[in-house]
Length: 83
Image (tube, rainbow, N blue to C red; front, side, top):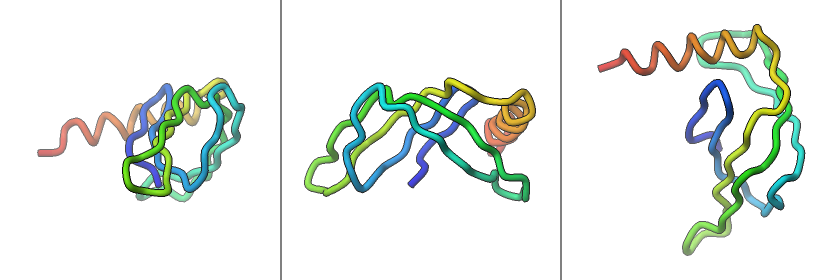
């Protein structure tokens, strides 16, 4: 489950532990858009959530296209302007 996203990475919860520095591939689309984005990243944090069988993950993007970076910049910029 995605919690936060930016041009450089994302934070999410996961049902299983993923060791730090594991390389992962992610596919996602942004709300209101149909384009599917593909990025690669490295797990930089994986901590168990208290009293849950889930993990708090942070992933730093290691490979991202200019198109995806621009889409994220636009999406994040709109979210910052919302009341």
